[in-house]
Length: 297
Image 1 (cartoon, rainbow, N blue to C red):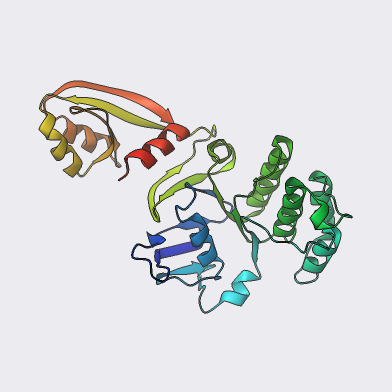
Image 2: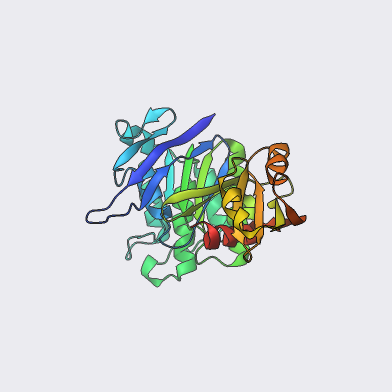
């Protein structure tokens, strides 16, 4: 079941001629961890702020639980756990005081909250201003997870965590996904995405340029093909093929390409051109991420 859906979501900020987010179509299902990847400034945080209804899109719409976010914002947000990229916590309050206050605003399973506090080894009795960034982040994570929300939206959640705490975090959100929570997690940590996400989407300059499922063994790989054109100007024909996705240009007559959907249709189109070389190779997520960022112009 689709829990979060966006349709042609677009956001222009005042006095900007180019959109921060353009025609974004996302869908996240029950129990799915969706990795939202991109460089700083790509549009991740703007998208998340629209999903939280902190800012309104210029055009397009968002539905959560099948309800229009614009007209059902308060009811929807009651069921969302949210972790901002830079969580601002009351500096003179202790972690325990902050969690107690937030627990009073919505139903929280006390035993689950205590379990999170133990697992994350949270510093609960010291003022926030005395805590390291990593320890502040633990409190911010606990407040997002402790209500066992139906939707969890996380903006760079592992920032400041050491590797041990990162693994504890991965276990915690995997448990919530198994419980049925739909999770969107923005990140630029590729290993993190490969480890815990079911699907990833890559955003660049406000546009979603690629989506991909992660295989059962948690290793994203993709089949791509290297071709060498006998006639260099045929590159223009390649770019117009319906079943061929252009990945990158290696030199004047060597390209990396891959199928859009059907391998048979892809091979039929490619074989219509005179080629002096045709070979396949597999790339992992990091290579693919860099390839898309460098070559999706």
